[in-house]
Image (cartoon, rainbow, N blue to C red; front, side, top):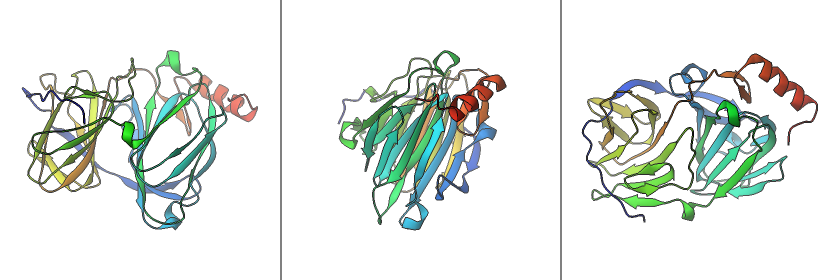
Length: 288
């Protein structure tokens, strides 16, 4: 457990909008909930997408995500339960399992697969897409797995447990930092009746996603499987969450890029011309 410096907020952000995820499928038929999609990309810049997946029915996940390309952004896969094998065209391979995180920078282009290494049991987690700044979109692909044991954790005086994947919360730093987008990604386990606060930079867009239980932010209740977009109130220096029952929630925040977003499926660039080039490079085998 990390050493914490518990902050006292002057003012908490509030909930600007509640969003219910949409059931869909992706890959070779994996059932999932799309929480953040294209309609919210400008509002939640630099976040592009958030998918939540979770099932104990192998038919919902067993086919996985066979070879598919990416260019221009980063993917962050957080596995709450289950085992997923990653392989990509840049020569990276790794096994993601319970509590682990996979962070991949697609950069100028990579083709990868994510295939379950289990035939039964629960598979649950999240995949997040974070945009890359224009000057980094054609960077070399990069990839790293982080085991559950390597993710920093801390507990508050109210027995709230916090896992810090990226950024910093109450003096505990995560395993990943990014200079331009400065993402904060934490998984928070709040006992019934407890309260939790953490700082969020005023410059950052932020949201929460409740995946167990329910909580309140100010006067607004956020139920399970709902995203709460946090207001960009200049005077607010963070957020306070109060759990009405045992609750698990992820909190994400990052500094917006304020650059054009042009997306075509798995390619996210700044101009239509760059999208055409991505398609040409992919079709002609010029990805890593």
